Amino acid sequence: MLHIALTGGIGSGKSTVASMFGQHGAPVIDADEIARDLVRRDEPAYHETVRAFGTGILDTNREIDRQRLGERIFSDASERRILEGIIHPRVRQEIIARTTLASFPYCIIVVPLLLEANMQDLADRILVIECSEQLQIARVRTRSSLSEERIRRIMATQASSAERRLMADDVIVNDTDLADLQRQVDRLHGQYLALAALTRPPSA
Ligand code: ADP
Figure 1 (cartoon, rainbow, N blue to C red):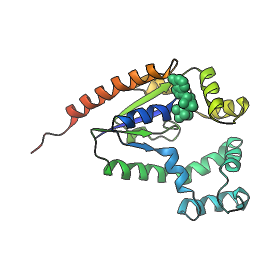
Figure 2: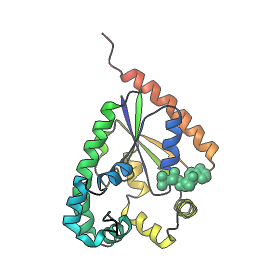
Figure 3: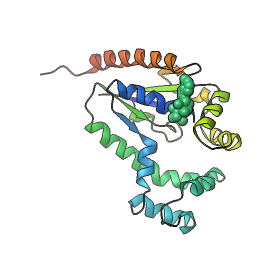
Figure 4: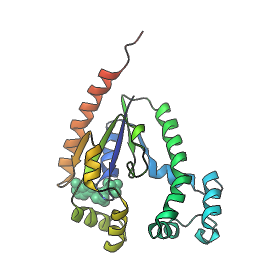
């Protein structure tokens, strides 16, 4: 199975593109969703995170308050690295477990922080989604209540589009409408099927 890592900045269109590949039947594995599940109350990474950051990050249900934790790691790079040390190895393990279970010529692994988390080796190809900063901000603002300042702070912690482009095997430019995005996904779907057929080991 061909492993396609799908990455891009906040609001670039990763979830939208992933669901378009999903409609073609491709299994979609979402690293953010895995990371969220890993720190649910009483999961092993939950206990490790609370030990590292203290009970001040818990809400009244003793769940980790992701917003509070997010504030801390955005304002302190060393704390961010501590959290990444807890979460990333487990996310990596879970991605590998899920790709082993999937059966389709290719799968899509959505890893927003692919470069930052050094997970490039999990992928046979890297698909980068790009869109202008202004569009990223406008799209995130229609989707959530995050302020422009907060979105810019998040973008500042993420790899730049130049850094992503250096790693990209394929690029989707998501600067126009959804119909154009769909056409780009359809074309790549065809390419990935063809590539997977080429790389499939001959049957006995
Ligand atoms: P990401 O997962 O990279 O953060 P999303 O896929 O959630 O980005 O896209 C951000 C927002 O922009 C969503 O509300 C999505 O519906 C919208 N969006 C994405 N691409 C387009 C597009 N080409 N035209 C219009 N809206 C778009």
